[in-house]
Length: 387
Ligand code: NAD
Image 1 (tube, helix red, strand yellow):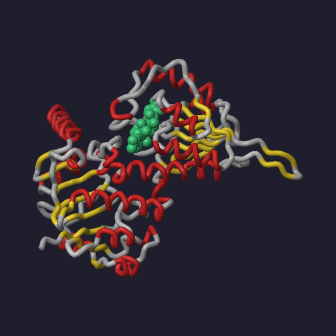
Image 2 (image 1 turned 90 degrees about the vertical axis):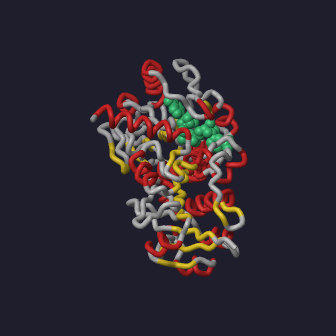
Image 3 (image 1 turned 90 degrees about the horizontal axis):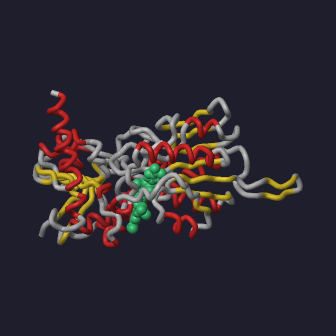
């Protein structure tokens, strides 16, 4: 009988507390033909001890023991562990379009890379595997809490013997999964919430959560492929920024979440917009990262105060700040992926199948995902151009 050993490694990215598989999922996936080996300490940041994993049925080992024994290795962030062999399968969030060098190295040793950020989002069969949604839900919730914490006044309207506080006015820019989660949380905290997205179809979702939709007259529909936003033209971008700047000055708190797949996040909050805000206002940029952010002055992580007293926060890795919840959700997604790939104890990488064909980045030394094949060709061309 075939047996597949699934390995779990400790995350090595600075500040990362999540783990790819939790003890609960070890129990779910362990069968006569699937065993699990976990690197010692992998769950510590998410409050899961080695003992918890043992009790759930996993073996505990060193990193080397995990790599030597596992045919499938699960992680959260991109990983390239020493000793990786031809045919081994890595499953995580590799952001392959931004990491073509790493992917080329893994392709050269004929490792198989499964990157869950490439999952087709609108396919209902794939929803249980959707790590972008599960993590964005948590991040949106936490962003509203971070904003409330940094804001020096109440979010709700409160009446006490000392008088009545006005509710905070909150503007959410970008209403994908994270934005909708931030709307729900800010509303639950009692704020008066307005939201905007460049996709007109977002209006109904925003209003169904009890928030007001901000209509801009200067930008036509920004809907792109697959439910994502398209990149705006320069003229549209400038018009959008100018119209948003007028609106932003009226809010106490702004939370930005806007992204365009494979591109730099669009600037939605310019320096002019921040200059119009009141002292004590707070801006949380969830898109802030290596590629920039939605706020002109934002740093990828951490907060600072502008000359006019506005606190600007680069949100950083919010799911990691709620690691037990984030790992629990991520691990359930991984469990669904493993169930999809492992049949009777054997891993089947059927690249002709609809989901597998999208999430497998490289297999047997060849690029599989159509999105990545283009990116690899482009990066080779650029290297050739610059040589
Ligand atoms: P995302 O993280 O790519 O972007 C966040 C939001 O920013 C999006 O709503 C996008 O429209 C918006 N945005 C981008 N550029 C903008 C701009 N210039 N101005 C204003 N807003 C801008 O989004 P996501 O959370 O990954 O969601 C992407 C899409 O996938 C959405 O349509 C979402 O409803 C859909 N989705 C569907 C399912 C499902 O059907 N199962 C699951 C998850 C997501």
